[in-house]
Image 1 (cartoon, rainbow, N blue to C red):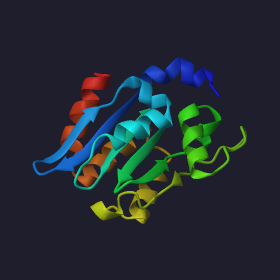
Image 2 (cartoon, one colour):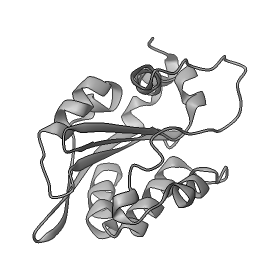
Image 3 (cartoon, one colour):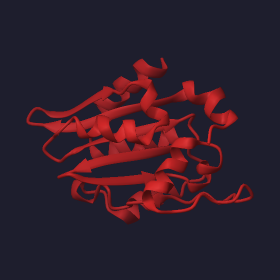
Image 4 (cartoon, helix red, strand yellow):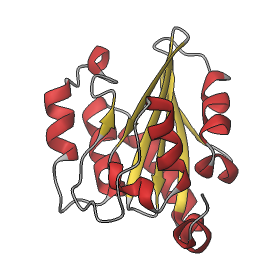
Length: 166
């Protein structure tokens, strides 16, 4: 599936890889092509080991975000809004990987899918993450900034994002 949303706004997508080493949190921008292909995204995350595994935060046009985390070989996925799969191939790929069907075009609820415990080992329990995802007034970039702040890597994350969208 390639939609007009994918073609017209994919430039508004970015992915940031985050991991923690002895000296603290590290982050770097991922290549643009991974923002539309889950397999490429997972491959990039797998290349970066870290003390707690590594993860990518992908913002697509401020409409939705995806978290891809590889931890001790285990792939963990979170999609902020299942309705994004109607218009965006990356969201559809995440749902496919999770074994879930994409919603109908008439579906208008904002519901997350995937692993709400993706950051539980870092002190962010699923209820808190669920509350963040339930904020219908927040855009994806705002949710990701809040997530980065809550987990303590907002400084390195925001520096990368500012350079990407600046």
